[in-house]
Image (cartoon, rainbow, N blue to C red; front, side, top):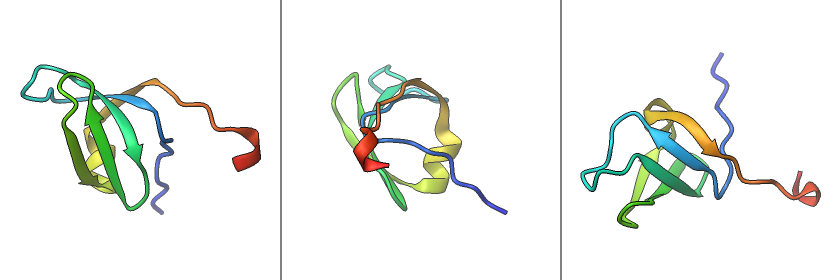
Length: 71
């Protein structure tokens, strides 16, 4: 069975491949069936389907805190 990984808005993630600007760090700005991420090197915004995003993430550098009232 497939269990999706959990990512939160504001997470900073590192990808396996670097962006053409040279940065590997991205900020998650939308989660769901699709992910929208912003390059921290050049501020380019990219939208990816969840499976492709999950495969491309190497690690979460900084996890955003979830307020307790939203759980």
